[in-house]
Image 1 (tube, helix red, strand yellow):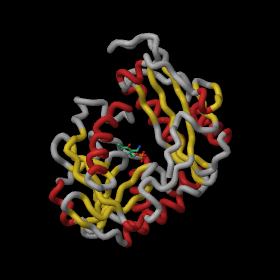
Image 2 (cartoon, protein in one colour):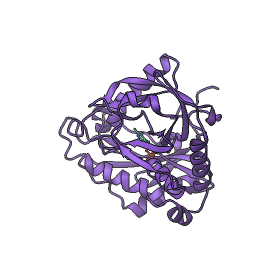
Image 3 (cartoon, protein in one colour):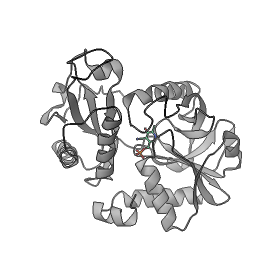
Length: 300
Ligand code: PMP
């Protein structure tokens, strides 16, 4: 399939309060966000016209900016309304939504106190992140790059700069024929994939790494709520890479990845099974419910 460049598409983008034609949503090359990665973003999905867990994403976006030392100049209500408005302007019911906030071009040096904070929101159709045949399972390389210590990087923020090691890890994995990479953290503990959290079925229980230096994903928390409804035991703990040998099922959880079964991580092999399938099916059903029902079924 031919690539359609992201700057040459039809549709609308909400940019600093204005709904503008897609191709006009441009910025200057001397923008602080580009040079110094002073940007934070979100990844959301709409299903049947509703943006899943919209307020949780908006709150995280605002908080991500605060962690980087800036205040996005819109309220959570205004950001929610803008996300819904772009989706509507683009005539989409099922889509990916990308809000991004960044420092502008008033100053271009490490110090950027006087920069204006911008916000843009785009939406586009995006099918299954790893392809449609989900239960086949994907293959993960084990990355060389490590998730940094929380005193080395603002790890609780969905900050653009943190994706530098993700892209490096994913490119290396793809060059070796893998779909993605599992990243360890600075201590050598299992952390997460490049854009999704990980779950391991061990002795019939659901185990997941403690998110103390990477995102505690909205999908991760949603999957834990679904598992609780099934009376599954969910254990958040330190997981060392060798322990992956005793996992029977593994899957990733993230907004773009949704619930994606995994069949290989480095030397370890797994068979996507019933627990994964149950959680995947329940997640797919949940995302199509009304926002009010979602809050009852899976509060996070
Ligand atoms: N970790 C990383 C690095 C991510 O990019 C994402 C996707 N935002 C996640 C985890 C999962 O987060 P969420 O479920 O909130 O999308």
